[in-house]
Length: 170
Length: 317
View 1 (cartoon, chains in turn purple, brown):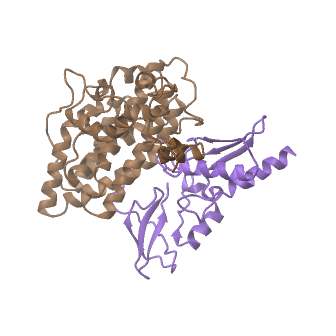
View 2: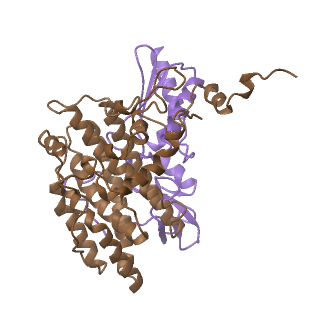
């Protein structure tokens, strides 16, 4: 009984979509850190922001509370945690596929980052290949490192001419 | 005709706010409630007031820099640069919010709370510590370094300012990931990735303008010269910082100089720019921004940032 309520709460929380990239659920984006039930039956959801100043965090909390209320959970608490920091590596394979299908280039997987020592500065544009999500061509260029949301950069395909967003790696 | 029913004429915003029982203060949305790290206990052997002050220092650096950068919105030379500067401002604001919430959790907001005018108790205006600290402190209570409050001048000066600021803050927060305070460590862990993007952005522009036309080179050099007098203060340790370094919580700013210099030594020659030789300003009798001693520029920044919230402290929507 308790287990099924928890499973049900998890399903409801995982289905909530990101307010800025609605092709992704919060589970796809990798910002849901946990869904638990407390002893008194309160559903406790733990979220982590993508960027420190992500303005969507408040909307995510609101949407999670509403989705869980609609699924019959009266007492809901949404907690936030900053550690460990979110990375684009947390975006699921399903999430990457959905981004590409929506015309947004998914991020590369960065893997474990070297620890310690100064962060190196590269003065020439990174040579990373970001394929065009429309035509698949590799010949694309960055038009702006910063885009309409904190997570995205703007790029343009030199082959088909289409501009597109790229979820930039952090 | 029926008499004036006061519920009909009540402020419609009040009705909206009570409809879902989720009225928001008009000038901010706090997140200090329910954030795992912010409620963490003060590490053993660490003075609570010192920790609160240190959180304010790092928060105010980011908050005031964010406010300065957002002054470019609607005025940047290209739409892409406007979006970039606004994004950088937003990242810094996010860093500031967590640090202000932590400072508030440690008691820093209490002197600035007021009573509600309608006698219902609680505080006038924002409930959240971060908002009380951002909007209801005067300039003498801000602990930011002088650099962040300076007028940003033209775009060249702005990217010179950002190169110095992002390089310094990146060096600082990279070390802070090892802090014994879990909030400082967590904020730093996220911020390092953001600041790396900010520094890249500034370095690319310094390079392009410095190694560009005669005019862009001259303006880039002038921008660098304008920023330079405020650099020395970044490497000056305050007594609070020194005590917290000993406690394993803070970073000693005097250790950051070589790392910032290494970045400037990489960027400036590549951009054909000359390292300025200008006397330092920003400290008065050894006291500076970390002591609450500021230039008049901070008052102007705060007037823009705070005046609306102070005029309507109880506004909700």
